[in-house]
Image (cartoon, rainbow over all chains, first blue to last red):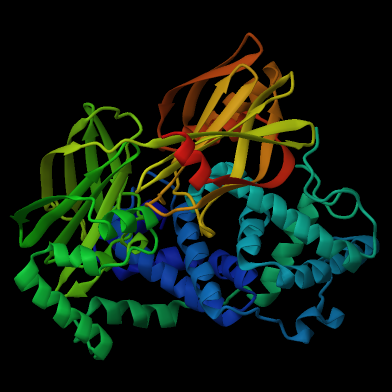
Length: 193
Length: 397
């Protein structure tokens, strides 16, 4: 079932339309919500709420547009709403960063495995120190792969605000990553010719 | 893809790290369907709503209803707080609106347009709705459920209404909303316009529509020529002027771009009135380029009443971009085509000129064009301009 058929079914009140959309987008949505919230319970709650909101608003959705950006915008907003309601940082249990949990990808060289594991652990720790808003732009840019203008459009914010937020998020992430990676790099987030 | 961490970690490594973190936290096979199905079916069923009494709210409601029966619908405005719209709050508190008190009923929904106000920057309408609950509306939906059309100077401007922007009072199903639009094109003593409200909660084929033809006196803006400057990274940034009314403030900040730079974008301008910080509303900024001279005028829905002492403007930074070459232009045209925007872009006398021919997805073309064409560099400014109104306003009167 492609998106257009699923959406039409949902518009007709057929729950199989919602099920098809959930099957297609729930993993991406849950993972994005987790990266922003750093909390599985908030992620699950946010995604569930996002699907319910989308189902409610589906009659106002223009079927000629792609579903994913519209839906992911709802996911990001629902997640930020919940994280901000908590007004506190959420820390991940230490075993999340346990090297023994890491399952290497056979296609990678030993050096790459060490590097990727090191990077993953560093990014995981650095993410927890970022504000939810900064995590959201990092997730939109580097996990979901949206351009700055797509983020501005999806979050309904001026491009300058998104650039500024992304720039500061990158700077902050760099400041957090460098000591964790034990290196002295150059400017993180600098724009290059 | 540009490097984010130079030799330490590039964008692709960061993306891969995020993917692995997310996959570990939410493994393949994770599903919320069972819970979601239950919640969806529960929402679909008619339900009884349990109401927990809030005695403070009941007290306020009783006062409100008493005032309504004795003092008319204006009581709604006097009792309502608009925390997200300080300008609207000024107009309500100071009683600057013109009484309209005109009602219309369509398909069981009644609107009462209570007050209207216009100045050289904004128009505000205060109205009540009965028979509909605005909390159901989703202003982010592509076809917004609660939308309005302002016809000014013969041009229709569509807006969706975000009820969450305004805190409204609710008793017996009646809510108060304030709608506003920026009114930059209008200069004159009187303003005639049409306002339509369209309510489309459940995708009805013929949703309730209301329209009002209004004529309002226009309150003038007070323009304060400030001309304070600060140097940052070789750029001189000048707070050119502040235009202020009770409902709104427009701040104009300018700079002279270096040669061979064609585009710029101030970011995160902030406004403080007597120390209270106000953000700006989406879509209220205007960029003006004249050769190398660049200005941004930013509107804020916060204004000044008698007694205001200081206005401060914070400028955190500016993005500047070199003039694109033909390769950049060709690449931008290809990127725009990928999102179904057809545009003509040309280099004229060292500056880019563009024209949008079609925009199938209704994207914000200004955002897309500037982000695909230009390679921005960030200049940090982090400066706070301060204007003592008691001196300047008096000097200009």
